[in-house]
Image: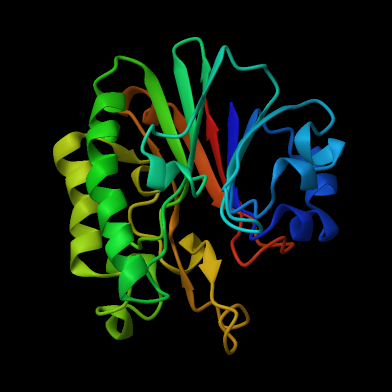
Length: 256
């Protein structure tokens, strides 16, 4: 099974950059997307249901903002749209597709980089999301949560870690939250389970400022985080950088 996760930074923009031609070459079973930046009325038939795929989406109420989606070769048995928490769901940040005993989630955690108010909201979302993650982990289902978590966990996960210790995305509280998720709750960071030591090759996002992309001054903030049994089925993972559909790169994982 091949699962791809990608923050699109706008599905219309990514479409114009060749997203669907590339997807046809990938033969992925499931594609999780974040930051759709569109409402239902903006979506073309190709965006809603690309050839060979079923699509499901959770749109933000605010136009041109946030939103998540999932493409799957097999029609889901059930779709769960949102967490049931109004101020989070208004921003279109969570969608879950269930296939038998497998749940696949597309997640877009908030960024706090625009200021104190959004950072406070990010912390609030993290606090309220953790019980749901514990529930998913204890459900007895195989679960993989794919998406833009907007947190680089460790120093190996971003180039300029020394200069970002006080910046959103690498704050001690954010990193500790991920450590709790992995070490105490029991979720598995699939990429790191396969490649514990990689640095430059792991980055999935680059700032548009300066020469970040050209110099590979990146961050690993996109993850596939899975329950232990499902994570153990991971065979390989890679970040696709031959083409650019967004300021993020696709994170690809092959599972047994």
